[in-house]
Amino acid sequence: MSPHADLVYRTLTAFGPWSVDRISRSLEMKTRLVRVALDELTALGAAVPTRNAADGTAGDDRIWAGRAPAQVLSLLRDRHQHHALARHRLQQRLTRMTYPSVVGDLSDLPATEARQVHGMARTIGRLAELTLLERHEFLSISPDVAYSAEAVKAAAPQHRKMIARGVQIRSLGVPAAPEDESAWHLEEQRSYGAQYRELPQLPGRVMISDRRTAIVPLDPSDRSRGVWEISAPDVVAELTALFFQLWGRAKDPGRDWTPPLHLAPRESAIVALLAAGHTDASIAAKLDISVRTIAYTLSALMDRYAVSSRFQLGLRLGAEATQQTAAGEPDEHEPDQE
Image 1 (spheres, one colour):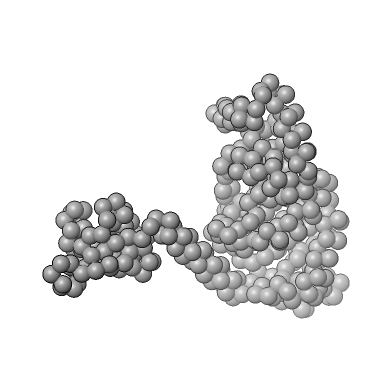
Image 2 (tube, one colour):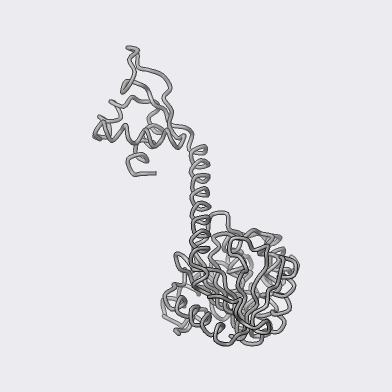
């Protein structure tokens, strides 16, 4: 909400129901600005007129009350999500308008260099096959602001297989919406050396395997229709050049906390997710490992750091990560400059 509305709301919740005139005098705010703020609060549902003043007049003599903070926070979250989804729908419309210029007309290419894979089931199967063939590099552009927990869970095993084979993963995304469920998977991938950057908006969804095969949707507005699988060298080279052009402009959004560099990838992933507030059971479900494995991993770390509790381990790891940053040690997760 605007600063004036925020101030008026805080006044109502701190001092109880007041009239416009009293709010104006107390805050030394012009009456007109108080009315505008109350209009904004009313539209949000954060303030309501409870009754008229004692003389029975209307207008500025009405008594205004603020709703409970818990209710207002819920309303603000709902509005934030609504706006995020609206931005996402707008981005989808912009994508549909700009997407053809990204890939050109693929229908003129030979069937051996651009084939259509129809339907979601066949698309998922083909992507799994390509994942097994990848040996060096996987590049992806995704304009989606939110992924469901089911979608992330389905994609995670394929990404783990690529990482296990030494495939270098670079991903371009956009700032996530509040309902996004992919943060933990991004943290896991980073722990294993994958690189991620963001731009405010991206032109369309593209995946490139080993700079030999590119995957783009048949219809950006309806993924269920399927994808184009492109192997035409010129087209793949153009899409690869587009990726690195965007990559050079994009920024690493950073992390709330970076584990010490010497930790093993699994140790780093577990510690980072614990620091983000996940439970052992939640981490086990997300990383497809057992709760016992998490306990063994943390026990080994406590032995290594000669501490007797997770709390002490967290203090030691936090201090070490802070010293590491202050010393200016190179970050193995920082992407190389193209």
